[in-house]
Image 1 (cartoon, helix red, strand yellow):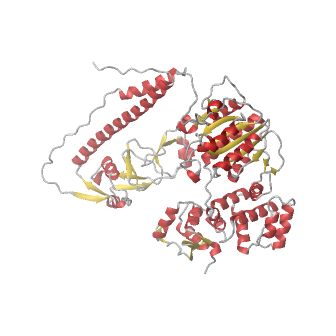
Image 2 (cartoon, helix red, strand yellow):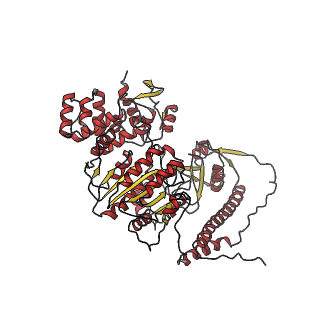
Image 3 (cartoon, helix red, strand yellow):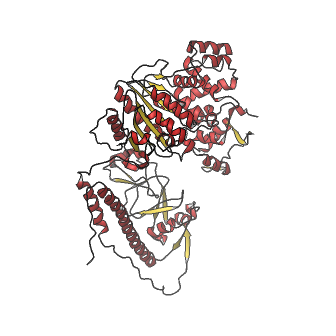
Length: 628
């Protein structure tokens, strides 16, 4: 039996093939792939209720079946099967040793690895004592070598380890990428304020992942102490090539996260960091909004008030919900504190109140810079002044929900007027009615139906595949449309680019039906022709002898149930020339009516938004015309 040490779970297979786990489940149920019989490999063992599959069999199956989106699955597979029963931190330690020494570990003895560790960590700051006490199996050492070979450098190897089976087993839920980018906006603005040439970042909390995500923008990373957390952070920094030190140069920025801490411990840690700040030192504190922004009661309120009385709080913001995977419904809060300050009016904002294009990272960074430089006359886009005395008196939260900056009425009146006037040109026009006269058909007709597959086999219709189109080839002034049955990702290509990049791609002719079967049947008619079709959409070209028109076929496809995913079985009626022409004309009129209604509805939605924005900005006043 193959070794479980070289096995993959279904999630591992999904990661290897770069598809969803649901796709792997479907593969197991469907033994045919791309016209060949290729059943999914049987599991070799069940571990803790989870099926395990032989790694080499899975790779061979992917190559044979053509499934998945990873042509280099054979190279990536060894890095996805960590040995069972090995502590995650031991794997990180061995990865750090291999990266720092530049040596393969599979053929080394324990004495060899200890020698390598002494050379890489002579001061015993991150791996020496761990390597001395660690006993590693040959499978574990071989896995680390495979992991490094499969990755584009040690940093990516660490990312693969954290995102793979061994990392998932920890169940750690960190901040989202959007949260990291938002926090980076604050740290970068703080760093530029202190010294454009760069400042060190001091790790002051327990969020190792957060510190590492920000550390690339600083030089160096300051890690003080010799505890388990500090050594783990140094290991990861070494793998990623980030310089660390235990000295504390000034100016500097301290990063403190109290997410996951008990409220009392969190307030204690915040107080220690904020009170210790010297001149030219900034602290960024991340924690639950309930602790940093909302009203508190009892001892917690007293503890927070004691910290705020230092006058070091410059900015306090409430972040949008969903930024912490551990509690996606919980909003986070963020403080920026400056040493040597005595601020009686900190600036606050509820960023959760801003949505869509209202939020701009550049403007937020500019607001923060203005706050740090104490520009009293500056107008802020997001931040608003708040009295520290009111906060300390327990009569108001630090950041009231929905608080926004106070803004003067805009002088850009024409922009709002143009928006409203442009949309009302559409909504003020009368909508033509749609009517059709239906009468009983004369005589008795013989009803016939054919499938689309029959029409194709008889030569009455032709089906052409669409082409895979790279969206990066889109051109703002392009004239070659790229159509998709779903109507998504509408782009245009430059004619020269289309001819050069897609010389074999089929072009549409007027009246072609563009259709797709998945995720649900849908279709549209290209009345102009000359377009490219993005796969998986296809082109259905209907001949004169088919007994049906393109708009009728499109309407039938759009009314099919979601599970009708075999286009060759789709049934369409066979009509005489007169009935076909009448039905096509009626459908074209119906589509034009529907298009007009949609255009008016879209314009109405836009004019509603423009009216609200214009009145709120103080740019326009409104009068509804009276009917005579």
